[in-house]
Image (cartoon, rainbow, N blue to C red; front, side, top):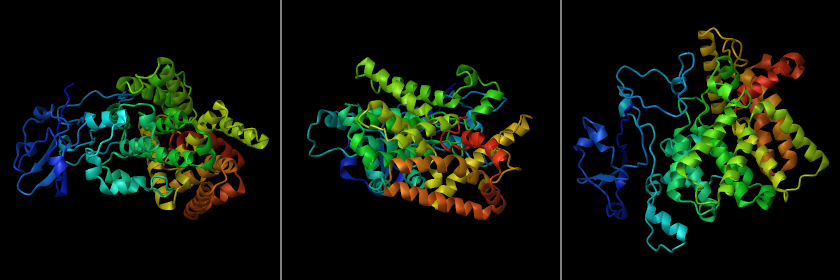
Length: 489
C-alpha cells in the first residue's frame, strides 16, 4: 500500500512571533505557492516541523507535523492497525458516513500533530536553565485551549470545546499537559519527543469514525481520572508511579475500539474473540495495543527491564478492570472493604484497587456530568449501539440487547444504565470519598435521570415499579453495551 502525505496548514490571523520567524528550518512562501496546488503531495513527505508564512502580510501558516499520515480515499488506502474485516465490514469504516459527491477526501487533514523540539526537551530533562526558552507551537497557536487547561481539574470541563480548540488533538494535548503538570516527565526522565510520539500514536489508533468510542472519549476519561486523582484521600496516598499508571490507563483504556461490543465479535467469529477465548476480548486488545505502542516508541526503554514489564502488567490490570462483565465482582469487593473499613492506602495492592475503581468511575462518568455534556454523550453512545443493531439486522444476526432502535430509545437506555450500573458504583465511591466532587456527581446523576425520565414516562414508571425479571435480564447487557467507556462486553 502506498501512503499519501500532505502538509497540514492552519491559518492564524495574527503576526508571526519573532522567535518563530527566526527559528532554524523555517521556510516561507506566498499564498500562490505550489503547496496549495501541488499535483503530487508526496513530494512534501520528507518535510517535518516546518513553519511557513505569507511574506506579504506576515500572517502565519503553522505547519505542525509529527508523523502526519493522510489516508487518500482516491487510489490510496494504507494498511492500518486494527483494520480487520468481518462480514464485509471494516472497523475503520463501520461508522463512517458517505462523502458528498463534491467533496475531496484526500485533501482533508485527519490529524494535526505538533512536534516538540529536541533542544527544549533535552534542556528540560537536564534541568538546565533556559532564559530564552523556545516556545512550543501549541502554546503560540492554541491560546484558548491553553486557558482551558488552567481549569482542567474542573468537573464542568467541556471536552468537546477543548477538542475543537485543539483541532481534534484533545487526547494528545490534555494527556501531555497532565503528565507535565504532575512532574512525571521530569521525575521518570522521559524523553518528551517519545512521549509526544506515543500520545500521537495512541490518538491515531482510536477510531474517530466511532460516534462514542473515540479519542475524545479517551480524553474525557483522562480528564475525569485527573479529577479523582486530586481527591484528598488519593492525593495523600498515591505515588508518582500510581499517578503515571492512572493517566496512561485512562488514555489507552479503549485503544483501537472497533465500535461494536464483545458479543458481536463472538457471534461473527472474529479472530480477537478466538485469541482471548471470548473473555474480556476488547479489554485485552486495548491493553495489548497499548503495550505495543509503549514498545514501539521505547517510552520506558531507559528503565530497568523489570520496571518496564511491571508497568505493562499493572497497566493491563487497570484496563482489564473496565470490563463491565466483572462489574459486580469489583463493586462487591469495594463494598466489603468499605463495610469493614479495612482499606489501607499505604498498602500497594489497596492503592492499585482504588485506581481500578477510579478508572471504572471515570469510564462511565458521563451521566454524572452537567446535562449539556451528559446529553451529548448519551446521544453518541446510543447512536453507536443502534448502528451495531442495524449491522446485525443487515446480516441477519441476532440483535444485541439495547442495540435495536425499534425497541429502545435514548431515554430508556440511559435510565436503565443509570439505575443498574452508574448509581450503585458512584454511591459506593461517595462512601469512600465523601467530598464536594462526589456530591456534585450524584447531584448531576439525579437531575439527568429525572430529565430522561421526563422524556420517557413509561420507561421511568416501569423502572420505579420494578420490572424485576426484565430489569435483571438487561442488567448485564446494559453493562456491556452501555459502559460508555468499555462497552467491551
